[in-house]
Length: 308
Image (cartoon, rainbow, N blue to C red; front, side):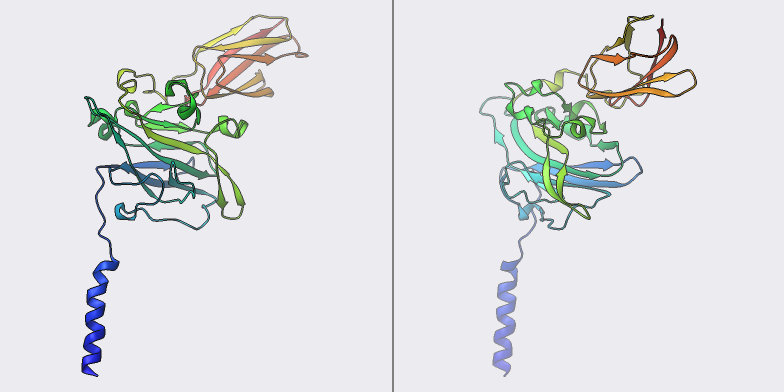
């Protein structure tokens, strides 16, 4: 009996180390933080390593599959871009390709970030200084647009954010909810209490040997307190419509027309439009207020309209 006990114990000791795989530290990783409109928070970790796979989970880097449905209030998960089985995790470490010439930058198509939220807008935060600490990471792109991979140049994508130029994105996903099938990131998955449905999200990509983001600053004010600027014409007018022309076309804008008693008479939403037609057919002569709320601004813009 003593010999048998010794044999079992020794076998257990010898086999156990082989069943445990030591977790490795990837060459680069960072945390992306998310917060909804009522203060719910969540986060995911993304990064890259030359030994990682883009097609399956990398358990050696701490990736772990989540098989339960998404929370129906607020939750964020990540998945490898090229994982055909779409295995979700709170951490994704992608592979990369090194350039053959200086500055030997990398191309890493790392992760899709999938968001389940009930209260919008969602605020996304990340460490810009960490991205800017390495030249090759200065072209980190966060985009909901599939065109970022399909267009001749990724700068042709309809919406993208240079993450090295801003540490925050505020997004209500109006463009997605208006036209969810229009080449936006759209993940089919299960949500608690809702069954199988579609969720929006972002592609997180570091582009190959491209210094475009390092030379621009036009994404610094994604969450700005400056009201959207533009003009309303013709004004005064007796015509059946007026044109609101914004100086910069935002990803989305909500436009409302009020009378001087505060009653909303017209409401519409535009997507990536600089010139927006507002129908005023049938309104009596008088003064009105046009309110513009842009997805790129926390402060609404107001325009006075005179109807003749």
